[in-house]
Image (cartoon, rainbow, N blue to C red; front, side, top):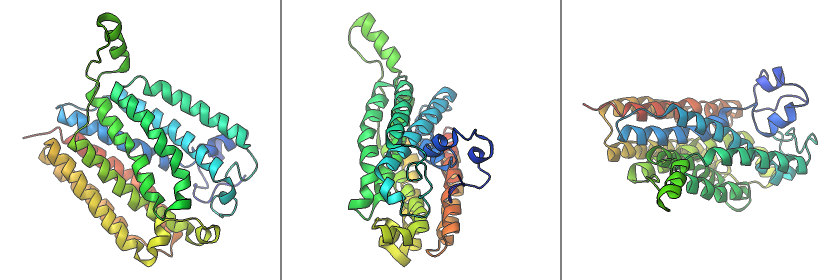
Length: 325
């Protein structure tokens, strides 16, 4: 099976994975890790923001847990998306070779893969604070609805923003609260009384809103690749709705991203180091917005993938916010 058009020809799955595992790894998009980063980084950002507000560095253990959970839930979400979109995917050149439309994995097998990834993710989630667990469960509604958004609205990218950046709230709650294991121990010893279940506040909400606009921008760029095929298949997207105005719209989305990220830092009382580091984030997004072209699919893919670096820059900026005069 040839590499998918939006995966590198030299990606590790096609280069090194055993042939029998390749369809499964491609179902989970492990040949295209950018999506893992884009789902994980809002969680890391939420952890960094909460930790900086508490005057400490992020917990390495928590960062690793969010990496593993994001990789698994992204795989489960991709499998669900492919199950729902299998007929549409067969009509779009970029997606026709995905394992389900290509006949390499059956729908029943894909459901089994989805359930396995979800159960392992649940085990990881249950190690976090009670509020984080509740937020994790609540996110399932967003995940389940996403594949249908391209059928009913021109703005499925906005729904993806609500979904992908939920981790910012979850990460913030996890970094401000005790684990469910501690809560359960407290109940057994003293009766039902959660110890510091975690909390949310304006900084977390501003960071979440910033992420929604960020995703709306980079996924509009991503959708440029499929403009012609989406039109033939009747699939809606922000790129189709905006047309030639897409580059300017991406610039606006990124401007809102920066304003809200700055607001998160301001409400959190982060130090000057955050403001300085945020400039690097602004420059990265600004350069993206200047380069967007609605008739250049390969460039759109390149700009989309660069957002893994953009998200990491913001996570570092939030971490540096712990440095106060």
